[in-house]
View (tube, rainbow, N blue to C red):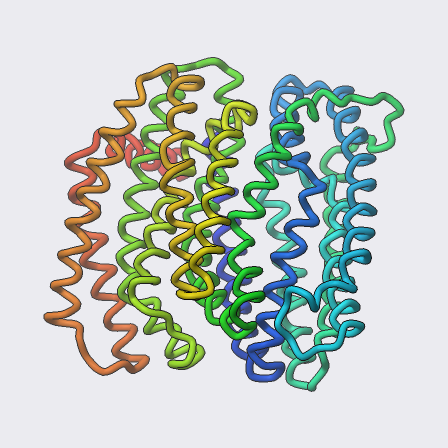
Length: 503
């Protein structure tokens, strides 16, 4: 049953992702054409600034999802209601705090954003953007119940419908020449409607749900003091780049950088959604204390993750700049060294997920705070040092080095010692065997691209190039991983048996 729910969640996640992402690629180009790359960069930068304001959340959502696993498996309705009611009150307070901070910050935005917009105009736009984000604190508490109960597919259905409506309206507003003000107001209305429909769905699904319980249960928040550290450091690591570029370079550089990240995050989000669909399953597996089964599932997940990361990483390196040229034009291309560093960050971001899921599902936030602190300090200091001279390349290098000297080794150490009760050396062997194979695949692709696929860039040639690289890399990796890794064979057999049961 657990596996079936994971598969259903995965399918719904991928369908939702493709529908929303396709619209985003189209609308981003239209956004830049109609409003300019500077306004697009400003819009992206707002998202990074608001991420700092969202630190007020302090990891409450993560702690809440973790806290709901056990009472859901035990069908402890009383405890579920108490936990959700308590966190709902906390979230409302956080929402007001975020709004208040945005109002206080708005007069000072011109001090660290290179833009021609006036102080008042910039402030109003920022407050509208922040209000859009803060709505979730007031209205979205119900969705955590569906996520923890492995019913994320029901969330995805509602979200996809309203996201599609949002994109249709945005297309109309952009074509009709409306400003960013109207686009933000439209997004506020759509989010309100989305959360209201989710609330209605949850009410029908869980008729016993009571979000106004008088009993308070703060047990799920006991780890948030450590999650605050995680949230702070993550915000700095993943949002500093845009802010530094906005301060020391220009808003167009943010558009250029965000275009690459948008494409790479799209590719990354497909396997990430697949892996995260298993998050609740692993959380439940941990509560069952079946260490042998947990190790088996972890190895299967790690193997398939590296298998996907190697194929996608190679494809991204040899096709992403071509796609950017066809999509936005030659003015939005970055150099190959920067692309290579982004690919390495991509591979790491994907391959760390199995370890991260086990660590977070086990509630080991205190044990990993040192790692995120080191990551934060390194990322900010290196990026700040290099951004003035090297621009985008400098901030990417800062992020890569921060990953390498922090969570790259620390999270696996905690996972193997605390969760899997195993030696770290076993993880190192598995990881570097996969890494060596990935390097060989990379050099093979270098030969293929330079020898056979080095031709004029057109849409037809680009599609042909992608198809050839997909076939070659998928074939090579599938054969190698099936022959080399027992965990890969076990994973394939698990999926095969599941398909037979469905039929």
